[in-house]
Length: 80
Image (cartoon, rainbow, N blue to C red; front, side):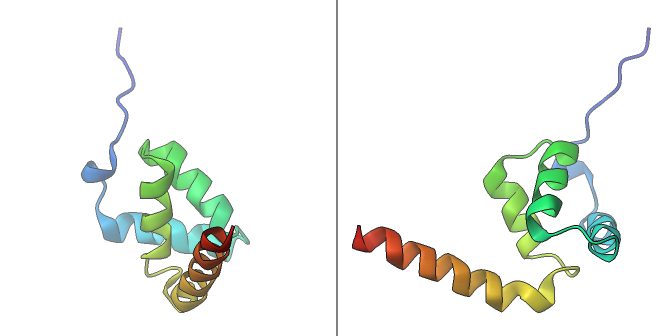
């Protein structure tokens, strides 16, 4: 009986996953949905999935906006 083998992130070529992310984005997936897919398929932590998506070619035009949102959230958290 054959068992399905999971594919950890290290086994997936970055350019190959960038192509998947580009297709997801083209299909209307949001960054959050792309992170969820990345996490499920690559079996990585939420933080790792977020980094993969945020640093991908597919989402590179949004990188500055991601950083601004992160910085604003971090700043707000420190004021609490």
